[in-house]
Amino acid sequence: MQNKIDEIVEKAVKGEIELHEIDNFLEGNAAMVARRLALERITNSKLPSIGSTIIDYEEIKNRNAENVIGGVQIPLGVVGPLKVNGDYAKGDFYVPLATTEGALIASVNRGVKAVTLSGGAKVKIIFDGMTRAPVFRLNSIEDVADFIQWVKDNFQRIKEVAESTTSHGKLINIEPFVLGNNVWLRFVYETGDAMGMNMATIATEKACEFIEREFGKAECVAVSGNMCSDKKQSQVNSLHGRGKTVVAEAIIPENVAKMVLKSDVNLIHEVNLRKNWLGGARAGTIFQFNAHFANIIAAIFIATGQDVAQVVESSSGYTWTEVRGNNLYISVTLTSLEVGTVGGGTRLPTQREALSIMGVAGSGNPPGSNAKKFAEIIAATVLAGELNLLAALANKELGKAHMRLGRGLKV
Image 1 (spheres, helix red, strand yellow):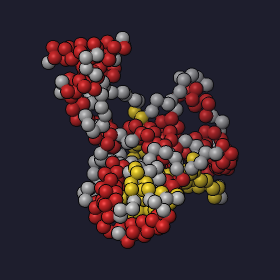
Image 2 (cartoon, one colour):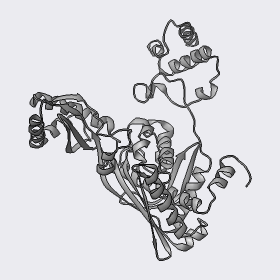
Image 3 (cartoon, helix red, strand yellow):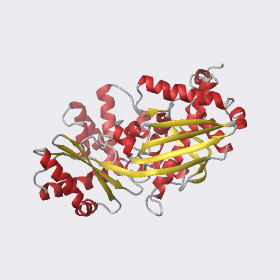
Image 4 (tube, one colour):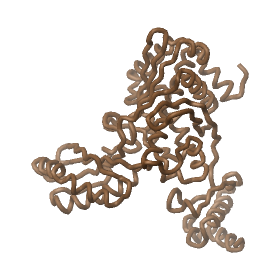
């Protein structure tokens, strides 16, 4: 086998075959090794750490990545125990965070302690649906009106066609949006424990074929017309939801704020209003009236094999605070949290283990319960992260924490 690998490496270095074509000559893992060795010679670099991976390329090929040369490792920490009082997540949880940002895990962990000592985070999922929105071209606004009515009248037929492509996806709604002679149909699906974007795309493509065939005046221009809206901040996601809309809240007693957060509830509340809301409004941070949702969402996504690009819309949301007597009420609303516990990167070994720490790896019983449990845990963790950062800002300790934990300096 080594002779065969050496032969293919030599051909790749000489340009006789392209790197992606190595898969045609060697089985998965041998191809990964040969591609890395060829790249080392082509770029005059050494990649032993990238090559030190437990990833089985044969397992992920044509599923997760192409042209693979190895893997990248990111430090993985945990926060917890975090007490969650949700409909699906009930009890104390340890949450994995993968990050290279010093102070992030420690920061979230302090917030976790404060939330847990306060009785935990209450969490509710108020919307659950993955969307795909094809755009159709019609000749006139008369045709547009007829088309929208036809879709409404034939919803059940469209639903049967779409659901014929999946055993878990259920079409629950089609929302029409109009601009001139263009119509977007925003298909909304329940997708079980999968994040569901691919499921929704395949089902919607089949539905579009049916629609074009049955309503001859409409032509589907693209199965994704940006009204979905995937990997982008958008008003439609903020208002209508995509994935899961989740709200988490806690009441932090005055003594917990002082003892754990070393802060004052009135100062934390003022920072939220002046930073997140007034500062966000002045800066134009639309749909992002929060301190650092993206920090926590990205770290959990990387740890658990989620689609990292969906951090864009999954971290959109709002932090709200109120002073109630001597206590602090705090809530976070994540409008479009897109997560799953099956499919995609969740099948990778370390990511699957990270999900198992929270008891959400694989399919739930009933289907969909693991993904909902996971979403509730994420929202509670985001709540803890927001609480601590607001306290750190109120205490004027943010820079000191980064110097100590991000730069290893004594302060």
